[in-house]
Length: 237
Ligand SMILES: [Zn+2]
Image (cartoon, rainbow, N blue to C red):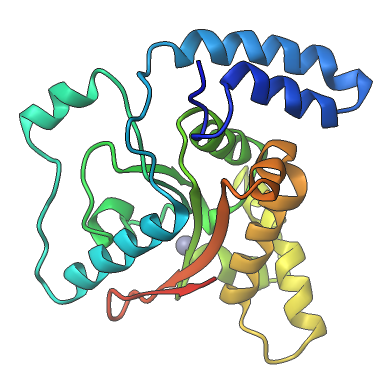
């Protein structure tokens, strides 16, 4: 059945992706095909796929409602819970920071089933984050990924320090350091903005699945920064 991201059958898509892979990774893709196929069959076809343009519009409008204190609190009833048990069609995916001041659904005034959210300190595009976003787009059909950083991000500030962080916090810092290095090379560039840009680039460069979706016009990756002083999200397309 043709249902993946609204343009080609899931099996055909994944086999198509395999065509871009090296011979060594073909077996991996074949195994993933069967796994994803089995899981995806629990999620009915999306009768109303949402384009990246429309998804961006919904996020902009939702953030405007949040800023202007005119939130609608959509899709948060018990009926929505029951309806979504049959399947989910998140209209956008977000890679955001874990910071407690940047709760994704609240700042975009969205509800259950609207957003596929991956949150990790520093909005780092780790392997697991990339895998989650591959699932959101290639299986669930989201056509927009927002890499959402924010002002005064503690993880980015920590990456600017020379001293190593304790424990596994350091793995987060290491994931941000390449962006910070760019800032040091070009004095005056904002470390927060550089990190958002770097993580967005990483999504495109490290995922064959995401790159192929972009190539065929079924995915857009955009960057955005949340102002924790005002509640406003500024998009950079
Ligand atoms: Zn942060």
